[in-house]
Amino acid sequence: MLLDKLKNYSEGGVYPMHMPGHKRNASFLPGDFPFDIDITEISGFDDLKDPQGVLLDTAKLAAEIYHSKHAFLLVNGSTVGILASIGAHTKRGDTILATTGCHWSVSNSAELFELNISYITPQIDSHTGVPCSISPQVVKLALEENCDIKLVVLTSPSYEGVVSDIKAIADIVHGFGALLLVDSAHGAHLGFSEIFPQSPVTLGADIVVMSLHKTLPALTQCSLLHICTERADIEQTKKMLYILQTSSPSYVLMASIDYCLRLLKSDSKKLFAEYEKSLFDFYERVSGLKKLAVFRKNNPNIFDFDIGKIVLVTKNTSINGMELMDILRDKYSIESEKSTSDYAIAMTSICDRTDGFVRLADALLELDGM
Image (cartoon, rainbow, N blue to C red):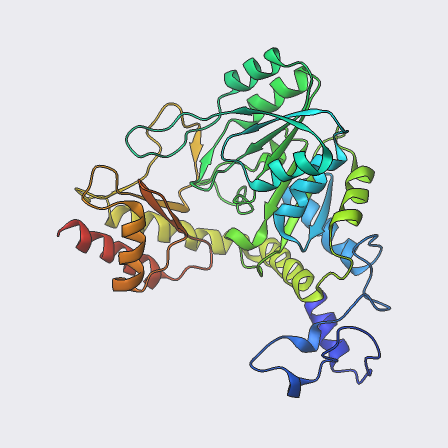
């Protein structure tokens, strides 16, 4: 794997008369920074802009694991993947359809590429404050009202874990001659267990961007861009990534991507079986909550839901989501991901320990009894 290749190189005695400036000299860097494997694009280590060797192998592995036609490694996070995907599949003056609350890279791309944006708004679940799925009928209506839309950008799963019916939406979008880009930054773990929704990669989306680092064991900024159908343009996407992505990609990050993918290929069945058990045990432990609530899929306007996103609902209690987030941090040493006035979000992954789930459950039960 790439990590082993980097370690072997660092131990090979080659003196670096090239970037980066730390020259793999431990005396200049405190702590355990992985300077020994932090190299530039030197001979034998391929070129992210036009991979032909070891980085191409990693990209092919990503496409194999996720069942896409082509995959690009991203070291600038899903943000650059969304920007590049939109730039590659539109021209100045085009209109794209997006949802309110989408990632800011979508609106930034409209400004960058001089595009128009038409927005659709999801319904809000009245009991929890969580935004619901985007319905296929709403997408169809928007496309009927604006025949100039060339690209539809949907977020699925959402930050809260809510999933839309990508297969039905893809069929509608394609029927109007448009393309479907799915921001699945929070969905890199989908498709590896039956308890989770299917990955949008296999449901008809043309392009899917996902962040490995959000829900899998990968360093921050490690992401993938998948070309899933013949409608999407691989060469234009490659060109846009050449323009937008750093010209000095981190081999530490790319080694992390490679490691994560190889772990999924070899051990996903075991890792996800353990994860499933931890989640089921957690939801069983908190099933008796009386005031606080843990969000579950019980609204017909929610197509599907990722139970790995633990949404802690405070609506109609004496505290709000921000206060719950503060209490969990200050009293129980649990740092949650995000909060709103109605809920706080605790993100989980295959890397969570059993004691972490127990600590969160015990904290909620104690707070609920006060």
